[in-house]
Each structure stands twice: as C-alpha cells, then as structure tokens.
Amino acid sequence: MTVENLANTLREHPFLQGFAANDIDKLAAMASEVRFGKGELIFREGDESSFFYLLLSGKVALETNTPGRILRIVTLGHGEELGWSSVTSSHRKQFQARSLEETQALAFDGVRLQHACEEDCRFGYTLMSAMLRVVAHRLQSTRLQLLDMYSPVSAKVG
Amino acid sequence: MAVAELEREQTTASEMTPAMARVAQVRKETYDTFTLALEPSNGEPFPGFTPGQFSMLYVFGNGELPISISGDPEDRARLLYTVRSVGKTTQALVSSRPGDAVGMRGPYGSHWPLKVARGKDVLIVAGGIGLAPLRPAIHYILRHRADYNRLVVLYGARSPRDLIFRKQLEDWGRLPDTQVLSTVDYGGLSWRGHVGVVTGLFRFVRLQPFHTVAMICGPEIMMRYVIWELEARGMPPGDLYLSLERNMKCGIGFCGHCQYGPNFICKDGPIFPYHEVRSWFGRYEL
Image (cartoon, rainbow over all chains, first blue to last red; front, top):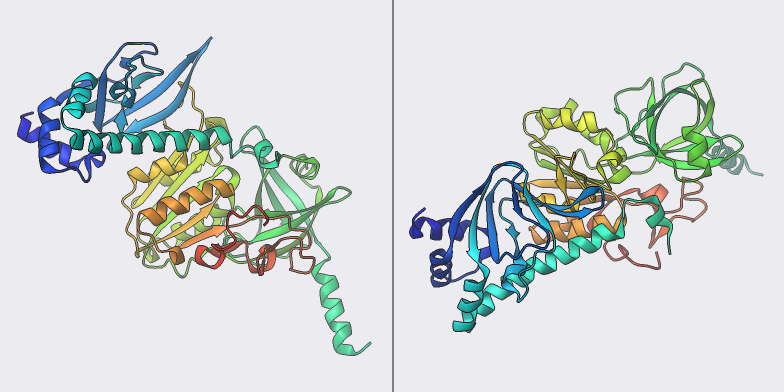
C-alpha cells in the first residue's frame, strides 16, 4: 500500500474521525500494513511489544491464560483498535491476542507514536484524546461484563 | 348491593380466577432455562395474544408468577413460556411434567409496536432471558415479512451455554434481509462468536435513524447502555421501546406492587416507549 493509499484507508477508520488531514498524513507515514492468519497469535501475555494496530478486517480475540484453560475477554473487529497500551510507558502485553479469522490491520510502532506526540503537542493531544476514548470504552465494557448482569444472582444481590 | 356493583365485583373475581391449562411439553433450552408448552384443559383454543404480553401462571400449592409468552402468536393451540429456574416457584414450574395442571390468567399487558414498525427496519436487542418476550415479535415479523424492511437481532448472554433459542437464531440469521448477531460476556476457545457486551455489536449494524424501530428487553442496566448507544447514533427516543419488569402480583393494576411513576407495569406495560418512562428509568427508588 502506498502512503497515499494508507492515508485514504486511515481517513475511513473510525478511530481517526475528526483528525486533521496533516495528522492523518503523519500517521500514514508511520503505518505499515500487516496480515494475520486464522488462529495466529499476534502477541502473547507478557510479550514486550510496542505495536498499536488499527483493524481493517477480520476478527481478533483478547485472551488470558489461567491454569488449564484460556479465557476469551473480548473480540475485536473492523474499525477497532488493538494494543493501546503500546503508547503508554509500559509495553508489556497484559493479554494475548489471537487472530480468529484472516485479519488485516495497520500497525504503528508505539515508540514512534510517542515521539511524534512529544514533538508536536497538538498532534499528541489529538491522538491521546482518541486513545483515551478507546480506553474509556474498554473500561466501561469491562465494568459491564464484571457486573455479570445476566446472572439471576447479580439481579438479587443488593 | 346494586346490580352494577355486583357485576363489577364478579368481573373482578373472574379476572383473579385462573383458568386451567395442562402442560403439553417441557423443553430444555439451557441448563437452567426451560420452555413450557401449555394447552387448554377444556379443548377450546386459547384466546389470542399480542407479542410482548404475559400471563400469570399459577403453580398450585406453590405460587403465581408473571411469565412472558415466548411462542408464535398465530399458534392458538399452545402457548409457550420460557422460564429460568431461579426460585422455588420457577423451579416447581420447570419441574412440571406433561399432563400436570397449571393455572393461567391473562394474557395481560401492552405489546411490541408491530404496527408502528411497518415499513421500517426493526432492531431487536435482547439480553439473557429477555429474548423470550421478543421471540413472538420476531415470529410475527417473519410471518408478515413484506410489511417490514430489515430485521436485525442483537443478542447478548452470559456465556455460550446461556444462549437460548440457539438453533432458531442460526436459522433466522440465514434469512434474507435479516441480520442476527450474538455475543457473550465470557467465552471459551470453542466459542467462535463475539465476546463482549451487547452494545459492542452495534458496530456491525447499519442503523437508519427515523426509519428504524428498536425493541429492547433485558436487564435494566443493559437496556440503559443500549439506549445511550442508540441515542448517540441518532435514534429518537420515541422509536425506542423497552420491556420493563417489576414485582407484579395481581397482573391487572389492582394491587400496586409494580407501580412505576404514574404507571403500573402490569396494566400500562410491560412494553413502554422510552420517551414515556425516561424520567423514571434507571432510578434506584423505583
């Protein structure tokens, strides 16, 4: 994909809605297209990985390992983001990510993104605001899952 | 006592007196949820019901419960009730055997806005056992398919083993102009579907505000988030309908147990347009 094509693809992605054209161009220059096969592990729990992904197609599961079983936490797909922790100071992956279908994504090196944010604070504010929306959404969804709201027990407690 | 008063009293007595029905079949949906098929004891067909309505079912020697009707509204020979076994009366109900007698009052309550939705897309959002009161509406739409545009069913449950009507969901999903998506809060490796909250499924839906009617049933917290999500996507509150649940006792608005603001859930509900109940929706005191 050329940088121009990458910019066009980025413009369509929900994560970048509201980004200025020059910010998208800046991101396009840092993006690389990646593909993952069905069943492929994108990263494992504890891995040092600094990549942040914008998913273009397919389906990815975030999973955690417990003795004797793997628990699927959430599935992500087209128009969503993977690996937001890459733009924080810690690059250790808390969960493992597995591609459930043929998956296409745009990958960004988190360290490069952090440097770009430091060099251009306005760009940094825009990017981190978008990132914060992702984190807030994930937190809200996790809270709802933790409420176990479909359980008859949770309906009676309290 | 004047004749008019006597007649009124007699009417009241008959509304509180259950008719007899017999259990024809008990079908296991999940480890804790069962669908009972009831037939009339006297051989006469049941009075019709409108999708979204409920009956008061009496388990003799045990207690009475409001249970939504979950079957096809055009099947007058049997009424289906999908029940989750969570207490002593529901446990007794799902332990019934074919031939057992069950008391029945109703059908009662308001219904899903199937006339309002004609000519529009229909978005059904269900959580857990909340799919049961919506199934008659889905049956109705599929029987009158030309009257509606796209049908979208979004269903969330706790885990794959908590999904009810799984086979039917798969069958509906293969029909033209019909999109069916399920998600679970907790999924293992064998589950190939979505994992996450039901609102996460909206990203797969092409929603047309002002041309869509949404029918929502599930835990109230879930419905709250669904409504916020739909409002954020431009859906007017008047096009959102939800099924509410409170502690119903009489089923006909006499006892006041299910009062909800100025409404009784049993008599004025259980289905309400959101804009009529938004002032009370989500309040702890109610």
